[in-house]
Length: 479
Image (cartoon, rainbow, N blue to C red; front, side, top):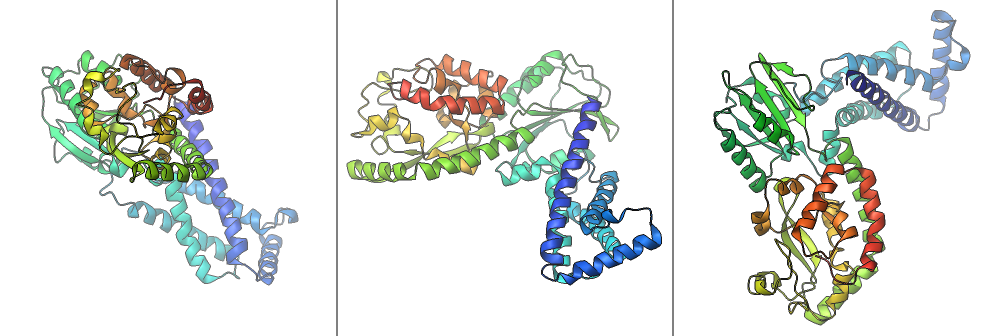
């Protein structure tokens, strides 16, 4: 595990270095020197003169501006990674506020001071001062974004600032509350509970929080004299959540997922991140979603305009409706659809409940009287779901994932099925390419669980490629 971590850090080091070097060379050529070509000659003459005086062993072929910039960036990156604040964006470092300014300012000071020394030392004298100031502001900003995936996640729709946690037995004045992992997130609730005697109550509390709140992280402090029981360990390790355990003595685990503890405030901290759509894999998934959804929106624009016009002519406006559905980690969102039923048809579900041909939260009636004229073909080809591409762009949904259900359908969720809330809901999924018209809610459960347990970018791509064939293969309209 340690070798793997070192390898990742090396790859990350060179990745950041390549980006900073490439941008610095581009910016130097385009802005710092710009159209003043004589500036290149002046700098080269200075470099050649210094070479002859101080390092004659250096080959003349290496006396190039790009080579010296690359060399400077390499030295700077070594200095930066040797510092205490950049070598790794540690969730367990102290952070007094949610602001990133302190981190940016530290990087800015190190970059600006070292870069100005470089310019003076190697006599890079012909530069635009205005663009130089801007350059010294941009580079630390790039480095801040490259430090951790949380910055990119924020841009792509999943910000740590919007994540929530619950805490059990955590003191209000504890230094642990100042750790980055908690400072960036919002506390929903804090309770005190005997871990050893109240395990069932604790599990019920967590279940209820997962079901009714947008919960991402669970923090549990095990007081001295209380034991961490196996039942609680098994339950927590099967949650697709971030788990932080705090103890004044080392804990013994049966689970293979627990890694060596972190020692903070004379306490042992055990952190397990079972949030499967988080970090780099989440960034890849979101990037794929954004690119493909933009392409599909543009490609389907004529069809979208036609459907909007058709629905408006047949049954009036609105042609597009929004419905409150449950999204990632139980967060409600407004899902868009083409309206294929009469206005407020969803409220008639209770009246038509006796005619429902599906179980659980699934609802379907053969020759549904709520359908507007001509809408059956739209539903059959799943064209009513095209507006959900906007939900994908907003980060509320993915192209691939479990179908989002209504808020009132929470009553059908048990402890096992609530796991579907821990991944982004999707437009299509394993169910849609296998048994999209099933009337058995247990089959939904089966495919959702299979997707969560085996999720990867490869599976998403495979499902996307199979979806068009599954639509035309099925004759009946889907959910």
